[in-house]
Length: 436
Image (tube, rainbow, N blue to C red; front, side):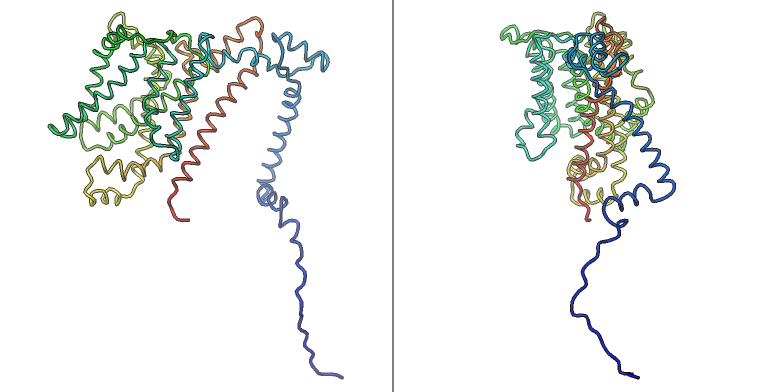
């Protein structure tokens, strides 16, 4: 019997084996995400069933779409001729025929170039605000764009928006004059009161006087002729642009140690947040005239914009207050240690961090504001969702059409709201400074 021990040493590696099919690729992902537990299996089956049900019912309707027809009756005749009697399909011809009405409402057709140009210039004005790689000098155009956009959309004398812009310059000059003499608080009051007095009493006569010497004007368009997405964009983008700075001021006012400022800010925020937007719109449309001098013609769209700005600002103020509350106390102490006054501390240290924290809430408020522009139908303005769709369906050619207009309008709203959401994610990622 051989009792000697023999030793074996492998001189080459064994070839690698493929992982089990359940541990790689799509099978692994499905096992971990769709079938990881009995509950997930049930939810997956129900979800797939719901999607299959919708696809089986919607796909045939979409596949039988008609794009060229002069009426709903003609649309149905074309579908039945192609697919047999009783067949149904989408009639997108209504969008093809009435898309100018959805975009411009009842804006004069020969002036369509003005809202188109205003939208293009809006993109130019917004670009340097959203993307810091663009030249900072473009911000000057961003500052004057509201006046340019107003003149293009409503027309009239060019000196009216110029006089409105002059109010901001007058307020700045007043603040610079008062600040060395009476301090920051009175300078701030002067910066607010002086432009208001200018706009109420002097801006109109000054614009008329200059226009009589140098008449530069565009054809006027009444607010009642606005409608569709031009109305939604005008109210939505103006509300977004003006509600953010007002919301910041309200948030700071709510945290202020000054009794009057604090209580006024708290009262305003709580009142606005406790009242539905539709109530404020009715107030702007109906009740505001009772508090104005007889014969005052206060533009309906301007009234709606003011109420939308105030409504959104109250919610943004609370979002920003949450961002301010999330900052550690050490940030305020660091600003004090650097010898910064209140406004420099807010501008350089506190507010940038609070706004970064508040980005998701701010963007959510903006998205809600943009969608809420459809509520203006209740004050007689033709929004794209209800007002224009009802106007289209009221015609004998398209009476009875239902889904196609709402799908079209919903898609446009989704594109813009999704774009805002993606930009907020980009901004959060860009400003992310923590260490990972």
